Structures are given as C-alpha cells and as structure tokens.
Figure 1 (cartoon, rainbow, N blue to C red):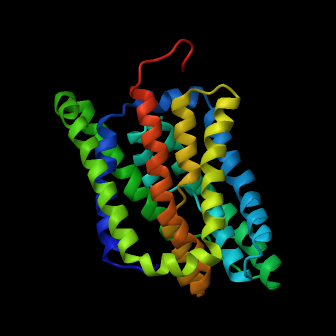
Figure 2 (cartoon, rainbow, N blue to C red):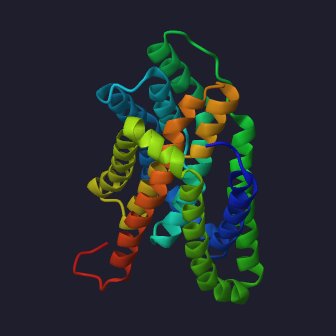
Length: 293
C-alpha cells in the first residue's frame, strides 16, 4: 500500500474532523475517571506490548511465513493502536476517554518497544540485525490528528455546551458515513493487492486480528471491568496503526514485502471492527437485562 492522496491527506483530514466531534462529547471528568481506575489502562498496555507480539510470532511460525512477511507481521504487532480505534469505539458505545488515553500512552511507549521488537524479529527471521530508529515523526503526526482536535472539541463543549450537544448526533452520523466511504475507497484501491496477498498472509492476518479483538474484549470482562472499557480495549488493540507499519517497512527498512501484512490487515480490520462495533451497538441499545453491565 503506497502513499496516496487518500492516505496522506483525505484520511488524516477526515479523522481530524471526526476526532473534533468526539471531543464535543468528552469532559475532563472522563479522563479523571480513567486515572482513578488504572486497571483498564494497565491491562490494555500489557495486552498490546506483552501478549500481541507473541501471538504474531506464533502465527508467523505456524503459517511458515517467509522471513519478510514474518517480520512484517511482527512490525504490525509492535505498532500502537490507530486513530480509527477511537472512532469505532465511539460508534460501539465504548469508553472513548480510555481509548484516547491508551492511544496516547501506546504511541509514546512504542518509541521504546517497537525498535526492540522489530530488531529482534529481524535478527530471528533474517539472521542479521538492523537498527530501526524510533518513529518520532509519525508519532507526532498521530498526536496531532488525535489530541489536538479532541482538545478543541472539549474546549467548544466547555464554552458552548448547547452547540456541542446539538452537534453530537450529527457528528456521530457523519462518522458512520465517513468510515463507510473510507472503507470502500481503501478496499477498491487495494483490491488487487488484497487478492494477490491473501493466499500467502491473509489468513494469518485475519486470525491475528480476531485474536487481538477477542482477547481485548474477553480479558477485561474476565477481571470484571465494565463492558464499555472492554469494548474500548478490544478496539484499541484490534485496530493497529497500519499506516505507521507501512511507513517503516517502505521508508526505513526499504522492503515492500514487509508492508504487505500491514496493508492486508488494515483492510481486514475495517470490516471486522465494523461488524464487532455493530454488534456492540445493538447490545447497548437493547433493553438492559438483570445484572447486565
């Protein structure tokens, strides 16, 4: 998946507008609540950095991926959650404040963890280490796309609460429309790549995606965290920053084959996250049963 007008301009612009809308529905108390109950943050970070790389490693070995594809899958696993995780969580009635917190911390943490995981993967699968510098520039871009629009939206809510309340529902509808258009555009643009690559790495990417989202949803419920936080963690660790992985593969490692897992995964995760979010939204809108959280 090469850079294009869709990925370099339209996607960041659309995400920025949608993140502005998310900020209209948030207050500082949402983030204070996350800070008061740190178990969700710690669990999300542990799953992202301590579990998912091992899942990807096991799948790479189980499917006997070529060394380049195996490194690409490990690179994907080491990448933090993408900005769209916040949007999907919002549409699925997840804890968006938790998502934003996890995205921010994971993005900073990956400055340390991503080079370590990637260099170890290069050493194991290719037999030769290659220094990979921290992707500082891309992390700054993620921060600008996520944090700045959310902060502006929260300021609007603080000083114009009536306007923010009126805009919240239209922005939610806009989010659905924009996401649908982005999915269609991405699939159409990369359809030939998806078909050509699915036979070799598609199933491994799909299983990694399902394992990520499934673990992210089941683990919080197992330790009795609220369902909204389980949805947020599932989206956060199931929707990886494929753009970051593709950027590193193409511009740092100079290996197009290593970008294939991230490209295939990025297309698959749009669809699986949409189905999961639709299911969670239906459950949230259904009449509450006794004992439901």
